[in-house]
Image 1 (cartoon, rainbow, N blue to C red):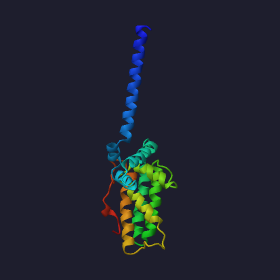
Image 2: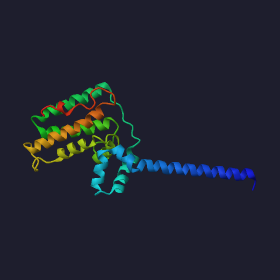
Image 3: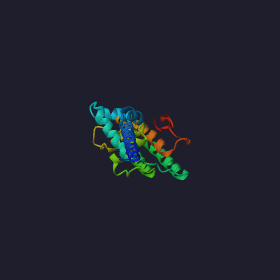
Image 4: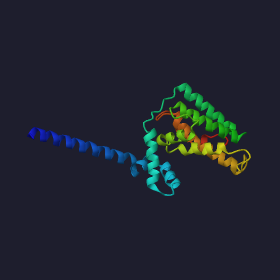
Length: 202
């Protein structure tokens, strides 16, 4: 075997080893604990709790979410569309005073619709939509989870429109407002993350 052939084989072997090492490190970076914990914040803690403290199982679930939805690119809203969603959210807040349960249900539908407008999976597939939102809006996705849960509670169940029931619905709507602001306003646009005190009827 010639010297040139040996050099070529060594060079190819080194390239293959370097490429394999890069892929392994990249995979660890995607799936590793500190990166996922930073990316998901409160969702990370929630996933660990749901897996009874099993960090590896929680990280596998979160890594799968990133794998499925990490490449999603949000579609922008034009000014008219943003104003329309803002007006509808204001109407939801005003409606809460007279009909809290209906207002919460409207907020749930509005968030699902807004998420679709921004490029997320169809709201008819709630779990898939929530999973995608958690990858890109981890700090506020739990507000959507809460408002969706409260909206699904039947009128004849323990949750009522008086006392603590109303307070739970109000808290759900305030929590959902943070995700609404995230979706309605791109970074740097006015109106993003308005304070919960802006909620009418609170």
